[in-house]
Length: 242
Ligand SMILES: Nc1ncnc2c1ncn2[C@@H]1O[C@H](COP(=O)(O)OP(=O)(O)OP(=O)(O)O)[C@@H](O)[C@H]1O
Image (cartoon, rainbow, N blue to C red):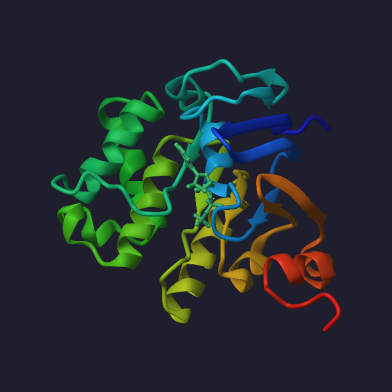
């Protein structure tokens, strides 16, 4: 079956810093793919390449078989690619509802009662309905993470990119968020999830890829990847001979 998202030999460098080196991977429809890698490996840059906020130096990116490499970021968003940011970036002076509304109107192209209804539904699904009229700048970390997810969902994504959404949360908060992401996944949205909180990833994803210095160094079933000596050495700092 044709992948919903495909990176085909994508390369990108900022001067001497290589953030993607002939990277190829794909995401099946309905799949949840986890991305691991040490700090600075190029994980967020990978999302920037997919969303179009940075341009690839080489290679092609496809969405449902269509070449989107030369598309602008807004066009990719309207075509169904949405993301959350590692550091939540809400419009701090707007309310939670208004933040969702911007995504629904600008991302999903909705208007009027249809936009209102979808925002309310997604705020309910992400556990934020009771905070709809709160100013986004006054939210707790968990609420800001939830708002990142809500805003991405309000753009009606086919592909949802989550960038370290579990980082900084307590164990209990993390489990609650995993449940919410699982519910999102059950609606058929395909997910790529970058995360350092490994147990959160493994609880949800079908497959893992590991990135180091912009290179994909491993790919496979989560348990197999976590047992790989190369991954344990590069990512977890555990000597392969130990
Ligand atoms: N616009 C840019 N210009 C120059 N260098 C950049 C730019 N964006 C990222 N980099 C560099 O590219 C490297 C990879 O950054 P990136 O944010 O993609 O890593 P990451 O794997 O997401 O790291 P982390 O886990 O710390 O978030 C880093 O060395 C970073 O400083």
